[in-house]
Image (cartoon, rainbow, N blue to C red; front, side, top):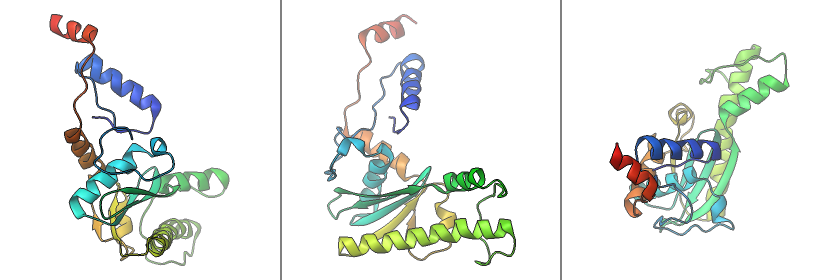
Length: 209
């Protein structure tokens, strides 16, 4: 089972599965049986990771809910009470923002991500760390508050991604942390869909080895 939003990676992963594992991979796409409606204007444009997170989060916690994924992009995905995917918001990821800050301002160094003890930084690096950490806390709290107001009903908030535990320390908005949400979604999607079959030529090659 493959879930990716990088076309070049998909090509190489498919080759890996076919040439080394003699298996045709099932690729997470909007046209599979997800078990819920994808209620957006262009379902095919929704990243597989966002749908996988929504599938796993609703299966584990019910709905309605918001999934916040601290990945390459920071995504906010809204899931209805019946599991339907309603869309969400996409913001630049933390590491992308740090890199852009360093590249655009030559005098600003690259920094690590951590929770500063003080919001008011008294030197360049602490000030940057404060802006990144507390800035993203403000982003999460602000967007989730607006999403809840627009949805018009209480929403559970589930966070995933490698940086989720760090940012959950700074806000009461995040109720649950599930680091393996995307992988859980891959397993659940595979269970719902028939496995693809390997082409006859590749199957014959496998049988002769």
